[in-house]
Amino acid sequence: MEQSAAIIGGGVIGGGWAARFLLNGWNVRVFDPDPEAERKISEVLANARRSLPGLGNVALPAEGSLTFHDTIAEAVDGAAWIQESVPERLDLKQKVYAELQAHCAPDAVIGSSTSGFKPSQLQDGRENPGQIVVAHPFNPVYLLPLVELVTTAANPAGVIDRAKEIITAIGMYPLHLKKEIDAHVADRFLEAVWREALWLVKDGIATTEEIDNAIRYGFGIRWAQMGLFETYRVAGGEAGMKHFMAQFGPCLSWPWTKLMDVPEFTDELVDLIAGQSDEQSGQYSIRELERHRDDNLVGMMRALGANDWGAGALQNTHDRGRESEAGLVRAIDDIEDLSQPVLTQSRVVPLDWTDYNGHMTESRYLDAFAQSTDRLMMIIGCDAEYIANGGSYFTAETHIRHIDEVHAGDPIQVRTRVIMGAGKKMHLWHEMYSGERLLATGEHMLLHVDLATRRSAPPAPHIEANLVTLAEAHAALPAPEGLGRAIGAPR
Ligand SMILES: NC(=O)C1=CN([C@@H]2O[C@H](COP(=O)(O)OP(=O)(O)OC[C@H]3O[C@@H](n4cnc5c(N)ncnc54)[C@H](O)[C@@H]3O)[C@@H](O)[C@H]2O)C=CC1
Ligand SMILES: C[N+](C)(C)CC(=O)CC(=O)[O-]
Image (cartoon, rainbow, N blue to C red):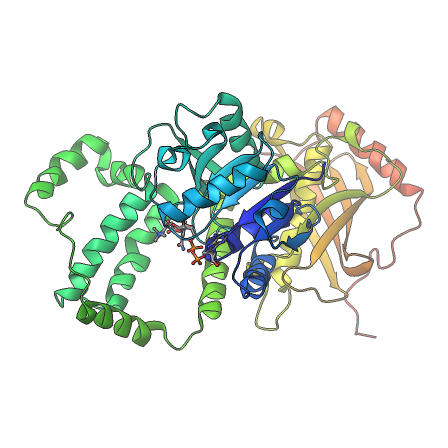
C-alpha cells in the first residue's frame, strides 16, 4: 500500500528525511516557507540517489512521489508519518505542532528531529500529546540508520509500536529511550567531545585538522564498529572490563578533561576555529564534502555488512526483509516458474564497486556472480546449516565476458541457469542485465566438497535432486550464446 510522509522543514535534516522516505517507496509531501527549499532538497536528493540505493545488496522499492505544498494543512493531508525538522527553537516548534494537530490525522505519528528538546516539552499544551514523539536522526539521514526514539508516558503503546515499525521499514534503527533527558543520548557524547575539541584549539594545543586526524586515524574508526564499551572491554585484555576500569578509572578524577567548562564563544574563538576549518577543507564545496563523506560511509558500512556486524548487520537484516518484494527466493519450492532462469540477484551498483574508468570494476563482476552462485546454492539446499555440517561447493573454473558497461547507481539483475548438475559437478550460467541490456555473462564450474577432507565428494541426495530438477527444466531453453567459449580475439 502506498504511504505518505509529510516533511515539515526541508533544510539539512528535513531534506535527508525526505530522501530516506522517498527512496524507500513512500510518497513525500514537503512544507517549508523558504523559496529555496525545493532546490536545496533536490541537491540533497541527488546525493542520496547516488549513495543509498547501492548501500544494501537488495534493490529498494520504486521511488515514491515528491510534492511541495504551500501550507501545513495541504502537506499533512493523508500522511501516516509527519517529521518536523524546523529550527531548534521551542516556541517555533510548539507553534508548528499547534498547526499540525489542527489538520493532521489523529492517528498519524508526529516525529520531531529535535537534537535537544525533551518530548514532554513538545507535547506540553497539545490536545493530542500522545501522537508526538522525538525521532532524532543523524546527518546524513539517508545513510545513517540511528533514530533516537524518545517517548513519554503520554505516548500509547500503539503509537510507539507504529513509530518503531515505520522507522525499521525505511531501513533505520529505532533506539527507544524511555527516559527523556536533554539532548537524548548521542548528542551528549557529541557535545562533550566538541567541548573538549574547542578547548584544545583555543588553548593552542591542536588545530582543527590535527583534532580530526586524532579521531579519523584512530578511535573514530574503532567507535564505528564496536562503540565505546565493547571497545574498552577488549582494551582491558584478558581480564576485560574490570581490568580496564581499574587501570583507567582513576584518570577520570585527575582530571584529563575539562568536560563541564565551556569556552566562551568570543569572535576571536569563532574566527580561529572557522579560519582553521577553511584552511583544512576550504578547497571543497559543501556538496563535494558531502559526496566524499557519503562515499566513505557507504564503503565502511558495506565492509561492516561483509562481517555482518554493527550498522552493516542492520543493513543485512533490512535486505533480507526486502528479498521477496525484489523477486528473490531462498528455496526451490518458492520458484514460481521452474522453466525460466532463476533470479539470483536484484540490486543497484554500489559506489564502492566503481573504478578510475568511472564504471563497475572487473573484480566486482566476479563478486556479483559469486553472490548469485551463493544464492543458487542456498536455493538447492546448500545453505548455512548444510555448510556448517561439512558440505559445500568450491569453484573450479570461471569465465566472465564483459559485454556492456554499467555505472554506480544503475540497477542490475542476475539470472542463473543450471547447465548441468550431476554427481559432484554443478555447471552454472549467469547473465547480468541492467533492464533489457545484457552486461556480462559468467560461466562457472563448481565441485561439491567435503569440508573435513577438503576433497570433492557427492552432495546430499536432496541437493543433487534439486540440481537435477533445475538442470532438466533449464535444458528446454535455447543454449546460451557464448556457452563454453574460450577467450577469443575481440570482434
Ligand atoms: N543539522 C544537524 O546536524 C542536525 C539537526 N537536527 C535537528 O533538526 C532540526 C532542523 O535542523 P536543520 O535541518 O539543521 O536546520 P536547517 O536550518 O538546515 O533547516 C530548517 C528548515 O526549516 C525551515 N523552516 C523554518 N520555519 C519553518 C516553519 N514554520 N515551518 C516549516 N519549515 C520551517 C527553514 O526554511 C529551513 O529550511 C533541528 O531541530 C535540529 O536540532 C537533528 C540532527 C542533526
Ligand atoms: C550538532 N547536532 C546537535 C545538531 C548534531 C545532531 O543532532 C546529530 C548529528 O547528526 O550529529
